[in-house]
Amino acid sequence: MPEYLSPGVYIQEVDSGPRPIEGVGTACAAFVGLAPAGPTNAPVLVTNWSQYVETFGALEDGGRRNPHLPGGFLSHAVHGYFLNGGGRCYVTRVAPDGRANGSRDGKVSAPASVQLPSAKSKAVPSLTIRAVGDPNQDIEVEVQPPSGESPPEGSFTLKIKMGTAEETFDNVNLGRRGTKNVAETVAQTSKLVTVVEEAGAGPIAERVPEVGSYLIKAAQTAIQPKLLPGDFSGNVDERSGFEGLQIAEDVTMVCCPDLMSAYQAGAIDRDGVKTVQLAMINHCEQMGDRMAIIDPLPDLSPQEVRTWRQSETNFDSKYAALYYPWLTIGGPDGRPMAIPPSGHMAGIYARNDNERGVHKAPANEIVRGALAAATPITKGEQDTLNPIGVNCIRSFAGRGVRVWGARTLSSDPAWRYVNVRRLFNFVEKSIELGTQWVVFEPNNPDLWARIRRDVGAFLTGLWREGMLFGQTPTEAFYVKCDEELNPADVRDRGQLFIDVGLAPVKPAEFVIFRLSQFSGGGA
Image (cartoon, rainbow, N blue to C red; front, side, top):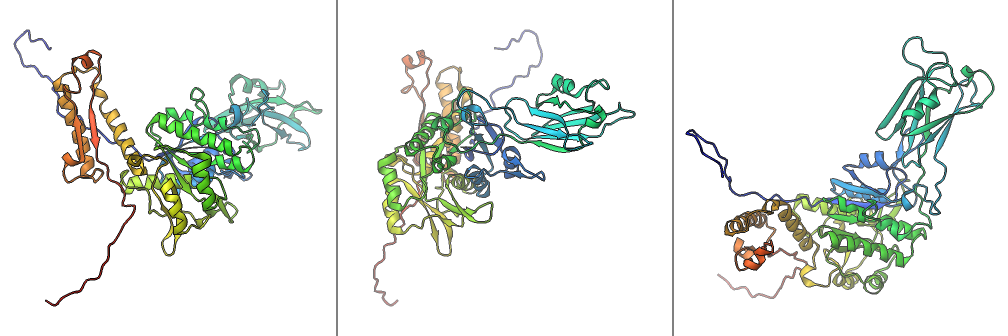
């Protein structure tokens, strides 16, 4: 308590009332897959398609970056995510054992390098510039004329750039002419490259590198037989794979489109696919605040995907959803190609959340960028798939390609719908973050009343937005925190229990009009 020892006016700040609970974000996806360049085995925040291309695209002749890896699906999934309404995501580029060259025998291949020709004769090598370690990004090398007045004879300026990192070495020289030998100067300060002078005949001035731009290409991750399921699941300590996404607390959706490219390339078999997808589901269940969006195997008929879902994988989780079939999109070469649907679906989740709210089922939504569903599905075929949790993507005449299912892979009817699971994820995370002030407060009836007030105000706001079912807040939810839940023995253990019940809105999945004949009479 404050002390009042001498006469005067004292100002004291008091509790200003309820502490509002703010809703957390629900529209952040995470992608794990293969890319031609970029950082490996760590989640990287990407906020738009251009940033993805700049970060994970391989630099080609003419300065253009190509984000597409032949046979890979990550770039197409991320593009579909942003195209369908996604705003930000995390991307983890998979590289076996953390090495971009994919070596698994304990040896690392020689670092990438580029050899610069001399200015006098392109046939005569001048310098060899090697990347430090085993780079995961392209390195741009530029030789410029010297700057300043009266530079020593044979001087030149060397600029090195890798991503956003840049290094400049002004007025360096070959040999011992001048005061700044290029190899020694670079070795002292560069974190990107090393330089080796090529031995050659003739004066040093004739062996000065030719002015121009050069490129050290990053070693590209290939879809190879040595790729293992563990490369996708990763490790939390190394921040790799799915497990590395634990540090990205705002993630709400997890996708792995390149699991299917690895399967198509023969790097992973059907059991490996199940292993990786189980790891995805286990990660989401462990975190408790995100959904795994599962892709089916390629080229499955409706009958085959039914068998694959029920017998071969037999997943049962309220934190996962499966979408079938694949989507046909326009490929980089202008020809149609089939890709897994998870990236586009994650974008639809985000668009649905932003336009309608997380309580609305992400279904009956147009799939932007899709030319068609790779496998046409009839109503009769969907009749066998929908009850087992296979959400179908169908083409409707005059209505485009639409998502026509909103079920999880859970056998529990209470968690049948994707929007119910995601609504609870949203509420749970929001309450968790919004009530951190409670920790270490005196555990007494005053605290219980304040908790009921704050949580009740938050849930009342959700009810007003149509996220909860009921004509009144009392019908939509309850918050119980009292002495019955928190007797003396509970308080002695330092515990505080609060019971919260919600009545979520559920989608009108089956709309039935009952028609009958009516003999109208005269007025």
